[in-house]
Image (cartoon, rainbow, N blue to C red):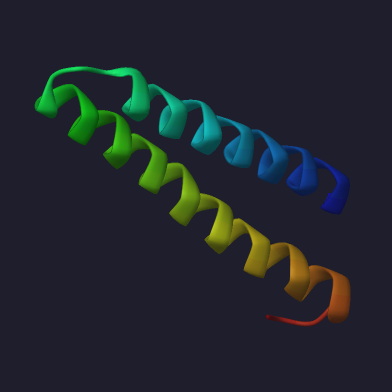
Length: 64
């Protein structure tokens, strides 16, 4: 299970970088704000998932 979560974590981080780059490319302010919002969403999801992965690594078979 941890391997699948690590793969998902990598995907979230990659998507965060893609949308961050997209925010730099977009010319209109609303497009930049949208892309930054999506990037931040993936960043927050990665942070939450990272804490779950750390919990499962450190404490197996116990509640985190």
